[in-house]
Amino acid sequence: MDEAYASARLVAVAQRALAAEGIHTVAPAGSGALLPLAAKRRFLAEVAHEHGLLPLLRVGRRFSEVRSDPAVSALLSAASPHDLFERWCRLERFTHARHRVRVRDSGAGRLLVEHTGPVGAPPEPAEDAVVIGVLTALLVMIGALDVTVTVGRHRPLTVFSEGAFRVEPAPGDSAHWHFAWSGSRPPRPDRSAEPGTDPAAPARELFAADPARRWTLADLAGELALSSRVLQRRLAAAGGFTGLLGEVRAERAASLLVRGEHPIGVIGFACGYADQPHFTRQFKHRTAMTPAAYRSTFGPPARRPDPTK
Image (cartoon, rainbow, N blue to C red; front, top):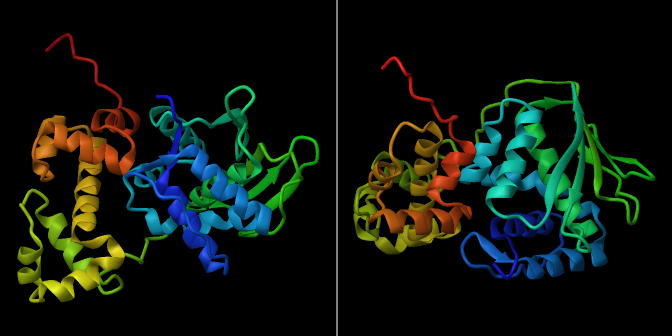
């Protein structure tokens, strides 16, 4: 692949996080789950030039909004901080990420990490800041306690403590990270998706109950006793009818793929995809991974056959 790509979902989250701090930007447009890496780098560099790195470090605070994303859901299933970082590294490999998180040392309650790139093209400080913020948010979301993050090899600074980012990394020294925590606990249940808090919740529940149905907007409107026009307006913030249906199908497929109990073709059929190529194309459009790659990354280890059976 000649051109490198980045996560469109991550850039969209960054844009919303910046807007929450009063920084209004225009994010580059992508195609499905991906956008050109050069466009992402320009976007982040412009934000850093105008506003510094602190707002980019805080991008992770909005990551709970995308916990339903299949990749994020798999990351949040991590059993420990060490498992979280191992999953993140596997995700980077399968999505052919240009920049990689390398765990250089680890121990009880700590990880030493370096953010690297191709020779002569390391991540920029703005890119470092976003990944630091996302990984920190994920650590907190899986239940890590008393998280602190220190950045820098030559002039280490504690940038995150007591639940907040307060300090920027030293200029030119943002690629070496030390994550520490005192222990962990099960994360508190997420209340954001409970019925009544999301205008699209009834539609989401219907789709999830029967993803294999050949849903149309008119069908859904009839089920909810709404006009198609009113329903379209209610679903607009959730990506519209097509976007929400595609999201629910991808979530269901991801859940089945992680379990590893059924053939991929059966999962595609059960989740409403027209055929295997359609399943592969649509799932990759949303996750940047094929169904087979997703299962290989996040599913159970392959079972060896029992020679006695």
